Length: 109
Length: 117
Image (tube, rainbow over all chains, first blue to last red; front, side):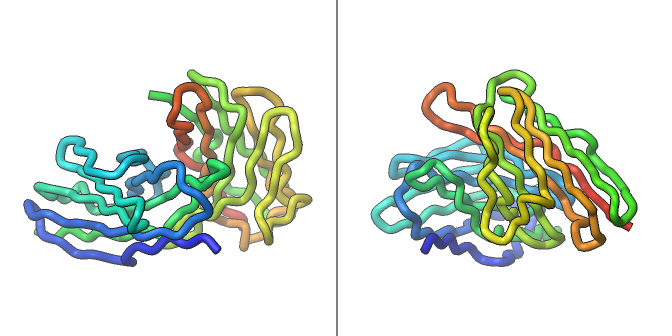
């Protein structure tokens, strides 16, 4: 079966750095996405990785290792507005998105 | 970036009635649209995949006669919740896939919050 694992909840301090991990086992691989979702809102796109390595976009970076079936989302200089759920999703061989359950990130002052 | 709209954003209906939710891709053509449902504090659950001009493909456990999907054009898909019950109250989100370029990116609508009383 297909499976994506990410921690249920994480807590971090404003101004700090946090890393949210995601491991996956899917039927094929055509890219990995990270989405941010605030409560009551639809997900918004954060990053896309299809090749191994680190993709940096401002305060957010995403890393992928296809051989390990592993990705992480790194958030720097945390702000209170970063409190949200972060969803990892993998596109399988049929270009369907397989979703993780999401990681709720709580930022404390 | 690509924009997907949903209408209505919120709807309250009585038990037993039907509700139609529209999903539109505003600046791109979407041959494939997806309908998700999300209960509080849970992740997205794919309900069905809708391809323009053909019947939708429903995920296991989703009643196709209750959740009617019509993808009549390259920019519009509709989800009709028939004979709604309180347990259908949820956040319904559509996404549209842009097949141009290489990324096959999915763009999400803002969601529709359905409350059945």
